[in-house]
Length: 465
Figure 1 (cartoon, rainbow, N blue to C red):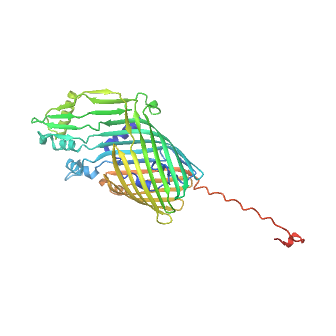
Figure 2 (cartoon, rainbow, N blue to C red):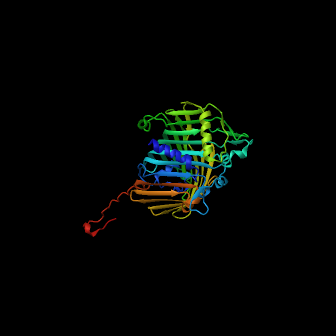
Figure 3 (spheres, rainbow, N blue to C red):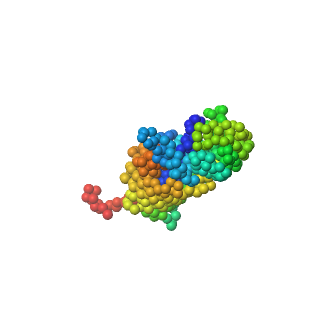
């Protein structure tokens, strides 16, 4: 388990992102699946009882490299071989590009609907996220070679990495009621207990300044060179993954208003909370803020590696401490309006704001969802994100008896042209749904009228009033 978690973190640091179009195609399926409550706790699925089981009921992966295959590799002329094209890489990179990932696995979820007003849920999910900025100036410095920067200082301020793996246990409640101005209002909330397993992050102010001397030696000045970590040195792994002191709390809140027969509006805020890392903590602080790398041409990769390695061993010393620290969850704000355009078709306009590392990242979406009888729901979406651009996605949920299958993708074009995409997002699973719909109120039976016999004739003459 520990190895799997570490691999997930390293994969995220190496090749993924969490800044896709934020799963809008799945959101536009509305309250069809139990997993929709992770977007808005007020979304109650159409079932008296719903059950989600480990792994098979919910897997979500959101990944982006910031660079596509064709942005990195080029064919070697007169050959079938390929090579890393550093010029192409630098041309396609910008300071805003990141290498990040996010994902979740459903461990368990049970939902129970009581009457037409009350809905309860219990759930547990495994979650991870990771983010690394591309240090574009540092990369350009290495690619161009330090000989081209003699007496020209190079400062890299875009140097930050963060990764976290945790589990959430939660309970949810939703209540639907009627008010005079609208048809109905559903209010939902979810309270989460968080248990952290692995965390790794560098200082958010870890700037690097490089000065190249005439002899090609490099003076590297570091600002606040710190690395904080937790969970990587556990000696009792089995106990650590069941119960540890890296805990916290989270909270979700949502509202869904059915304005009239055609229009509904929704708002939700998810993942308000934080994890305090107290157990298996190890923080690294560099004692020296200045490192001297002896002369050498960095364009010669083999030589550069040896030079940097020898210099770091000679000059870098660090001290460690076990001070606790805190990581905040990635809070999301979601607002949407849903309008019925046909008997079974709806359009939805959505805006999502993700608060990652004190920055808000907006995503916009416009979608159409159609319900085919009681079996199939299909959604399509056109979405936009400030860093990822435009995406075309689709979602599907099909119910066969008690079995529900669902899936969604936010970048269908990327599946068609894999070599030119830097973004991948997918969600899929199998749920078990028992019962359907609201409970219709029982109509009182009309009292039977008493027959009054006015005739002295026998009953077969049927003379009644």
